[in-house]
Length: 182
Image (tube, rainbow, N blue to C red):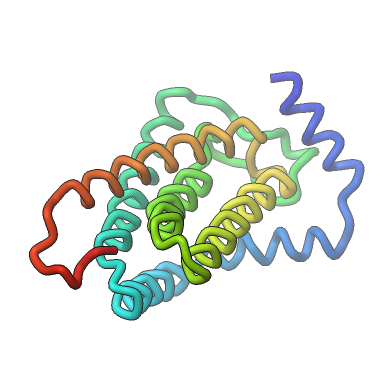
């Protein structure tokens, strides 16, 4: 898409050292398996503290489903990544939809819905942190030239849809006790 190229060329002409450092830091933080283990443990702690077991279960379900669907979608769509001369990271493999976009939205959306349902300070904080984190990670992937903007938007749409579906699915099942409401 022409607009994807125009956006990436504009980003390329305005990159700065400090922004590149932040973008690389965000990308690098998501690479090691320890990050996923830490996220899992944080999610369990969150569920235990706030009684958000269903929302956390929906997050885990949506994350796995969104990542798998994005990987399948890449093979089906077959869109190449941005050209190497516009990228600061290796750009091998296929691009659309962004797996990281799908993963972050799939992980965030059920907890965002939980936060909106809470309608208190904790809920608003959950929403703000997760929306900001998801947007920053997606923006970092575009900034680094690992993805086109439309790749990330497609990944967010896919992950968001699966996040909503997982949240609704797990909240449609009656709770066994009054304590489990999240």
